[in-house]
Amino acid sequence: MSAVGIAEDDSERERLAALRGELHFDPCAKPERLTSKNPADRKDAKRVLTVLTSAGRGADARWADVPVERLEANGVACGLARFVREVQERLVPVVQRR
Image (cartoon, one colour):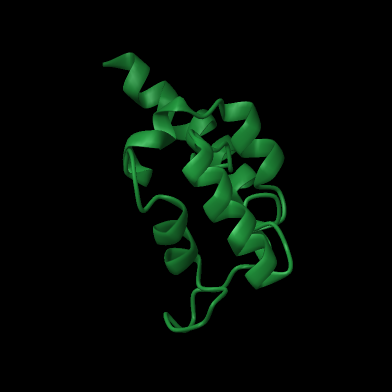
């Protein structure tokens, strides 16, 4: 599962469907509804990510494949879009100068 919910195979599609049923929402479409306060909580973001990426490539390896526009579009409500814009505005120019 990519960072924004693009399943890479049938197994991942099945895990995402199971999580949708368990959580009563799509964690990839509504990441703002996930939490980070209690690792035992079924809505814990790290737990959900672990379930989604339990097979195949790890989550860290998948970030590079996600178009920036998709990160921005899916991450508005959870602050990811703002973070991506700030990286583009502040960090990318510094790295490009090197």
